[in-house]
Length: 245
Image (cartoon, rainbow, N blue to C red):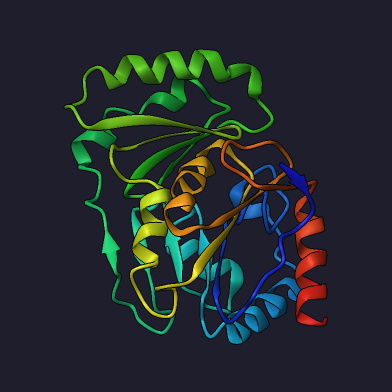
């Protein structure tokens, strides 16, 4: 794994970015993050100069991404691949996973009584359990979630990220989202270059060899990455230089 960034050809590459921990610094809660104005401008310029082949691939829902980066609206995948939007101007999704049934969500309604410090987020396609700042709860929280999941029908899994756990349907992941994006112009036929920071991003890195793609890990070694950089700030600085800001 090399340090630094790959050399890009914006006429032939597709740029795919995870968000939290990759483009922006992680905050105590998802709502507390800050998207610098210069980052929005750099992404807009990159989208324009790549003829639209720039996308966000995030665990956040699309509505959250659009709110964070407004007025910029990019092609994107949300909720770990459950939503894929290939064209930023369209409200029609290229792919949408089934919503979690209400009966499943109800099985976790009172988890907060047992773990008062854990914030439960209903993403509609998945249930997320945030415990940033309370990492000592991780083992007990995993044990309780796995116990409750025994009462679920087959087909669900527990996804582990940075101070977050998510229950989602099996077979929906960021890697498949990358495959789906690459079926559509202007991504089709381009070399994907993916940037991610968490083990949840390794699904994306795993599919890159299918397209002769390149992976960049941010802040930690990730399986399948070709390059590694240190922080989201370093990524933002590189984007500013790349776009001439």
